[in-house]
Image (cartoon, rainbow, N blue to C red; front, side):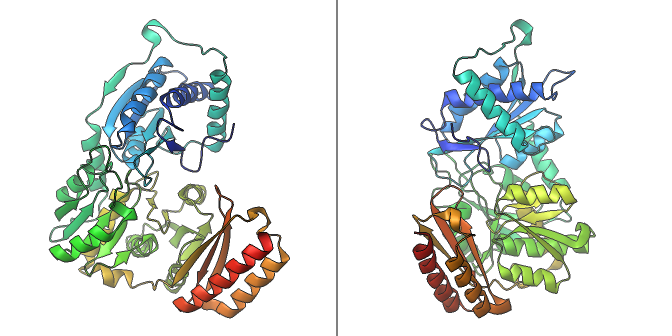
Length: 452
């Protein structure tokens, strides 16, 4: 069996790859593995279970709840809430386990299961591996030890989670948003109620789009992966800024008053300076991935801040932050982690903090993000090649060295094998878009000839 867990839980087409049987089995396995690890020792275990609005989440939630309760775990069903809300409530309620059902920014037919450990932190890789192993062992016939009578788990609907999470968001804001007009694109997703409520309580005048989930329309032409509607709405309403989330609201992208896109790198730059001003940017350091724009790196250097770069994936950003005690990190895609207030990327919190910076400074968002110049970036995918030889091909190494000499200090090259497909991603940044395209095209040709 191939590894079920990816970098962000277990995902697949709901009712094809991700079935009710798989959801139930993984939940039972997770309960047994955490019990073996001593997580439940000395008390009756509790789990928080939430989901995004996908239609498939209804039966998958039922399967997860059944699996946990059958393994003797009491379940608090918090309903449709963002991923960071489930993580927060897992910690705030002292639960032993959190489960989120979502496929984030993926199209509606997909769904996923993500487990959180006590405190709302992602499960360690070794625990995920053990859950897979135990699941497979019992799937092929080994019987479970099942509690009976009063030993089975009880299931409770926990409606208070919504207000608790919104209160948490408002409580960490450095200032109110009175006087700001903000357009919110909720991607017909998990933040459709939470985000408008939080921004309104903070004092903003809000206009919402993509805030009518029906189980089928999540991420459909809206949200952080489709910014066209948000850009148009911000300009039409004369708003100060726009905020876009993805389906489970662990991402945030923004739009300034002119309709120009503000990506995760730019948001990180603005928040880094805000946190430093408040003395909350520990070690004056920001964590980002190697895919962050070179303009972000140059801006942080110019501002006297240290940039730590990790492999692509918010899990690697979070690992570095936790290991070294850094306060802020994120990805260009809009996963922004403010570790003092969240254990995962939190799109609503990020949007609130960005809006608060606009309100506090009295500056337009466009002026704030001008702290960094986003250099032109070209990404070319080269399919059907032997990605394992990216780092060992002499021909490719020579081509990369030549490209780096041509670009100098105002550009860079990154070749990255795909984690899931037989392709290599060629990324080139340069001060000039035509130069970036030219260099990327030449490198893509070398990848084809050297690795094809």
